[in-house]
Length: 499
Ligand code: NAD
Image (cartoon, rainbow, N blue to C red; front, side, top):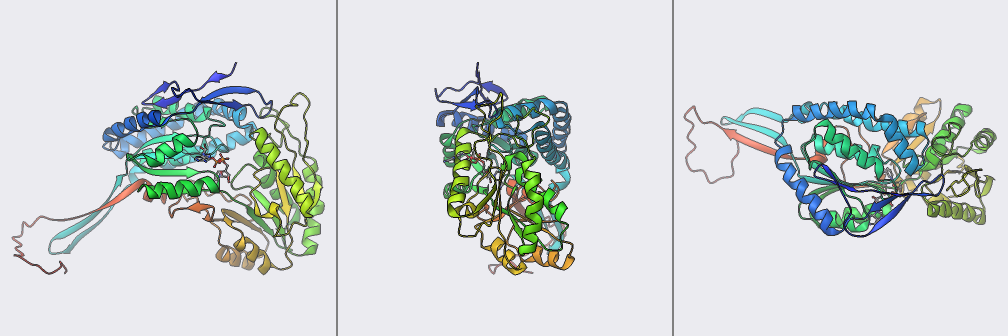
C-alpha cells in the first residue's frame, strides 16, 4: 500500500486538501510507494501565514538560543542517520554509502550554523564625526521559500534552510515531489530539537506551489536549486515580484587531464565523479577533456575496464555501484540521448542502454556509458544528460581546453588533473566556472567556504551556505547615532551633512 504523505505546517502533519496527488516511486523496483499531496494556493497561503506569525518570535530569539537549537538538531540527525539514509535510498534510489555521504555534507552546514552568533556580528565605527557612531546590523528578512531538487533530498534543504533559520528567518521548503519523505523527516526532527512551530515548514507539490510562493506578498526571499530552465523562470518571476532570489542550476562539468597527470589517478577520479549517484549530481563530471591524442589513448585504455566493472544495483545492495535513475521518464530520456550521440557520430565504447537486473526488472536502471570522440557541436556535449554517461572530448592544446570550458553555457564545477603547478594556477585564474578542483574531481567546498556556479549555472549574485549566505538571508541596516551630552549644538544647517 502506498503511504499517503502530508505537509508540515506550524509544527504538525497536515493532510493534503487539494485532492491532487502524485505517485512516489521506488526507482529500483518501479513500485509506487507513496502518494505525495500537491498543495493548492490556499494551502500555501496557510503555511506562509503561519511562517509569518512565527517570524515575530523567532526573529527576536537571541542568536545564542538559535545556536542551541542547531546543536540539538545535530545530535538528533546523528541518531537518525540510518533512517534518513534508508528514506533517501527508497525514494531517490542512491546507495546507502552515497546517501550517508550526502548526510555528512548536510550536517556540516548545521555545524557551521552553530556559530551563528559570531557570524551575525555587525560592524561599528566610533566617533566618525561630531560625536556620531555608526553601527551596521544584520536583520533577518522574513519568510523564506526554499525550492529544492530531487537529487539531494536532505543536503539541499539543509544548505538553505539551516542558514535561513539560523539568521532568524522562517522557512517554507518545497521539496521535490519525486522524493519528499526525507524533507518531512527533517521537519519532525527540528520540532524535537526545539525549533518553535511555524519556523520550518514543508509544503509539497508542483508548479502551483512554486508559483504561489513566488507571487506571495509575504514571502521575502526565494532560494532555488534545480534545472536551468526552471531556475531562470524562478529567478525572473521572483525578482518581478520584488523578492530577493538566488537560483542554483544545471551543469556540464569538464575535467581537463593534462599529459603529465597521473593517469590511473585521473581515471579513478573520472569514474567516481562521473558515475557516483548515477551521474545525478550537479557537480558530476560529464565531460573528460584529455589534452592531446596520447593523453586520450592513455585515458581510454584505463577508463573502459574500470567502467565495464561497475555494477548496477538497488540502494541497499552492498555491491551496487550505479543506482537506478529517478524515474522511468529520466531513464528513457538518458537512453534517448545515448542513441542520439551514436547518430551524431560519437563512438559509444561502453553502452549502458537496456540494462536489466534480475529481480528488479521494472527498475529504472541505466548502465554506465562512455562516449569517445565527442565534439563540441554534438547535442550530447551541449546538454546536461544528468545520468551515468561520460563523454570524452579531445582538444589538441591546453589553450583549447580552457576555451571549451569557457564557451560552454554552464559553469558550475570544473577540474584539472596535472602535476604542473604553473598550469594549475593558470587554469584556476582563467576559467569562468564557480568551483574549481585541482586534482580534486568534485570540488564542492566545505560549509565554511561557499557554493555557487557561474554563467547559466547560477542566477543572482549571492552564494549558498558559508559566510556569504549571511548576505542573502539578512538585510543590512546601518544606524548612525549621536548622544550629544557634550553640549553639541549644530543649529539649523541646510547643506548636506558632511565632516
Ligand atoms: P527541477 O528543475 O525539475 O526541479 C527543481 C524544483 O523545481 C522541484 O522542487 C520541482 O518540483 C520544481 N519544478 C519543476 N518544474 C517546475 C516548473 N515548471 N515550475 C516551477 N517549479 C518547478 O530539477 P530536478 O530534476 O529536481 O533536479 C535536477 C537538476 O537540478 C539538474 O539540472 C541539476 O544540475 C540541478 N541541480 C543543481 C544544483 C546546484 O547547486 N547548481 C544542485 C543540485 C541539482
